[in-house]
Length: 156
Ligand SMILES: [Fe+2]
Image (tube, rainbow, N blue to C red; front, side, top):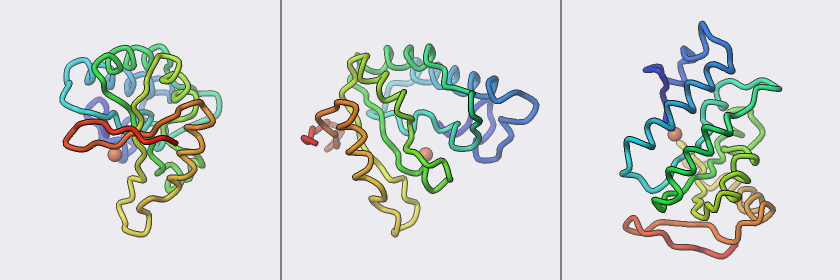
């Protein structure tokens, strides 16, 4: 999801006239609303994208809302993506953050794809190994790809 409250995240407009906490609340609540209303997808990409545009120490994710997102998508056989573009945006981490990946695992999630969100040829595959290492470290045994919308699991 690239916009919230009708505002493109990249523009920064979401963060005007509200606290960062309120902006995150709007983003995750709207994301939950979207996954409840729209089912025609296999993977939820870069789940905490909002943090790529603004983050501050001490302002955390909304785990209660994210749990509800996972309670919605996991039984449908939908997964999440690890996206390595955070490094391109000076975040120094993958998206979503480790705590969200751990939550997904705790809740029984098993479908994770990895993408570099390259936008340019030279970034294709960037930091993919780091994403695999993180998955293994958290205890995931497989990474997923899709063929004709059917998941295929590959041992890490
Ligand atoms: Fe995106």
